[in-house]
Length: 186
Length: 143
Length: 171
Image 1: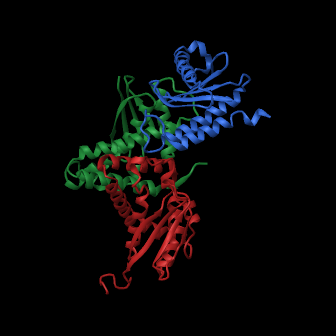
Image 2 (image 1 turned 180 degrees about the horizontal axis):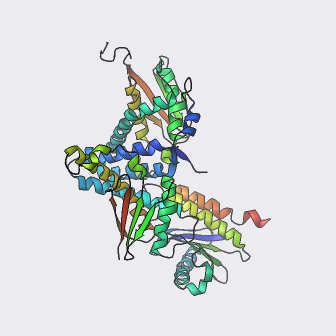
Image 3 (image 1 turned 120 degrees about the horizontal axis):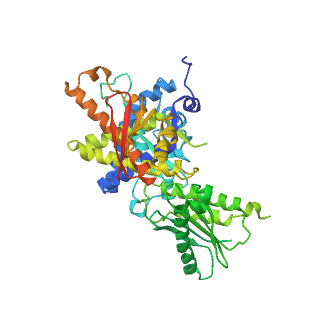
């Protein structure tokens, strides 16, 4: 059964249980709307969505590693590539690319042309500060933390705000060496 | 040419109405749409008149006026779609296909999580797709 | 062909949404958490019924609409139909799913099930399960009310992993 080496995002997506994206899209939308009603402050909703994503990310990483057959990512560069090519594909069924690397190789952008979270969504004028997809940045941050990479994930471009794509900036803050998980070697 | 389209909620509350003429006959068109709602109610509540097509969403020609033809469509969720055209020779298939696309655009608009059911549809995307659908009406068979 | 996502996306989102409302917002007010979760379901059901009835003739009576929920609507969501539909012919319908997907994919410890109300942990499991069920209850209520059928919907899980949804139509 187990194949040697990492599997492609397409292959995994084709093999996992899938459901209508509509259910996912509408459930997420209704959740965001309910959070806005309950929390009132857009900033507070951004924070909650990020927290929800983080909680999902730290749980989803196991499923991701198991299904993708990826044992360990050597460096941050490789990791970013895996998120874009395998992670986003196998869960959301979308393609993403990695660009805008800085010289140190610790900061890059993940760019999505398309994203099932925002199907049908139009932000009302009262929600212009809302990072509607903030759950996604939280997922990435949470998942990376479980493989010892502390990151900061921020939205640079957002199609709901009129940009031509979604751009997530992922910045590596600190990488805890895998061999010494208990020590904080500064 | 389609001169006016409307979406009306189940309590006859207008959700969207748009005319496509330059002349200042918007008021007249709105009146026509308003009158057509009664015809829809009458059709639906009098099964004998509409015969076997009782439950079909497409209601067909509601009534002809001197200059216009008015068509109707009623969804399962009791939302009415009205279309007013100046074309006198209209193919049934074109009208059906128009309403199917109009309905699909509506369904996408109300799938926006920020849309409040029963409230007017303010979506720009919806207005644009309706305008596209209206412009392409009858085009496939016109030539 | 419609767009698809991995099922674990829906599972993760539901689990997290329920936990956010139950543990972070309304930890001491389960009835408020329940109402919010149900409201989220209601909106989803309302929108889905609009989508899934698009290509079909209008329903003539309540039974036809309920049957639609049991067959097409359920299949779109869970790739299976409701297994059993019962009615008292006075406005109450019981829709039973013998293996409700959102419950089978949740880890409810089967060992605890026999000892009703004994352990505190068992209560917590039961409470967590019922919190999750406010979401599908809301979906059914939202879908039916959009089809012109105002109703109340509750869930019965005395027969796990079967789950019965009780629909009471308001006169």
